[in-house]
Length: 234
Image 1 (tube, rainbow, N blue to C red):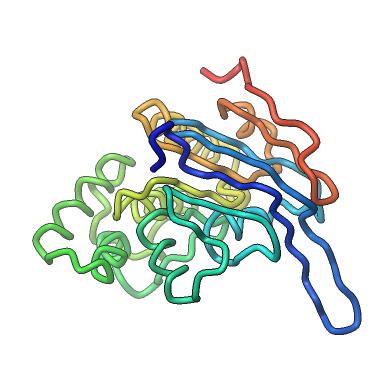
Image 2 (cartoon, rainbow, N blue to C red):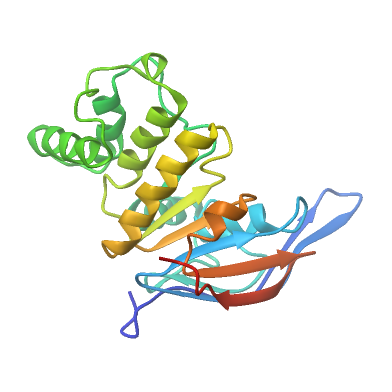
């Protein structure tokens, strides 16, 4: 992290997809800084570029032009292996579809990032139990995803995203597949994580979730059209 607490620093970010027949400019010069402890919601209509921006923020892709630093690491121009290493150290992901492995338990799903991160078995087990208890699933450690509700699966996904203590928790439409009650529960967990000092970046169509964020970034046609503090955030 930079000394001024800037975790994400994007400058002049462009992303062009070249299909061979046509070039599509998905992002057209994005400037975006995110500081430690912020809760940022990125909102915009379908085709606005927000999913492309999420992929760049999460180090799932690299920009065509521009500069991007995450936690002080320069992302632009790195190799695929270097990008994966930065991603694994810096970013915890929460997806709309949960992306849990169905044939292993909730605890084992949460342990997976730590397994690949070289954490000892004892520490993996203890941390997974601690995280699942934190999201209200201390009594569901041995349940497989098929034995859990959608809201419970998303809680497991949040616990897994926190396993390596990342700089950023990045969530893509995290309430998109949930009923209203479960979605409200997930929003409350995000709010608690933010208040405990976590940095959150959430891509969402959900106005209720966006209103929980401390800052709302609106994107349309590949450019940021509005970036403002949210006085409603509690």
